[in-house]
Length: 283
Image 1: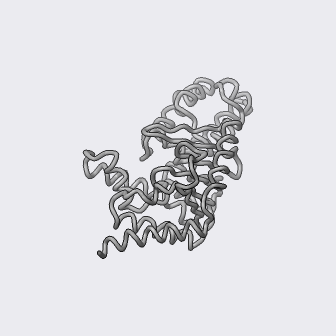
Image 2: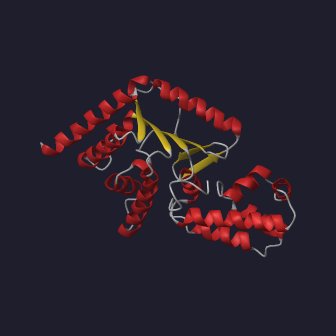
């Protein structure tokens, strides 16, 4: 992934920083005469995880970095760098690693039960989402969150990567987040992305009944690392890489997609609802 055609700008210095962390880890490990498997056993993780740390496809947690320092006698270097990179992330702690992995993924599949996924949000819609959750936050804080969210959308500047497919619960397009003008703009933004064939969007209609998925889900696949699943609730996120759990999540996503409207019918519905919002503004 170091030769990612989208370039090293993805998520700014975060990606570059973790790649440097990985290259230094590999250099120190080889200087100590340890294989990835041997170091993994000593720091209580798998050898494949060490390999993913070294290629920058995964980020170690701080306690793992501390154990690496102890084994490689690196005088706290990896723990200090890990903490600095974590602290410099513009995202909430529970989402920071998922955001990083989105910037590396070859394919992302998402199910959104409440809001348009962050990577597809317009500035006005993102602002409305943050104001809904944090109505008393200072304006500069709200703006910093909006800026960070818009930064995530830069992954769509590459013409083909990642492949992004999203299932929206119908309540996402019906909920008046920010009002009619904001919703109309947001929904037409989705339509434009689909028509440019940059993303795929399907709507899970109310009439489909109870969804197979109970909350937000993101499935990420990579060229040279195992897939992961990320689920999220209020102020909490869970990144899963256990093959059984990822497989269960993929099956649930497939069921939701089977119940959703086709791409063409979904775009037609989204545009129709957007036009209803626009008509309200003109009335």
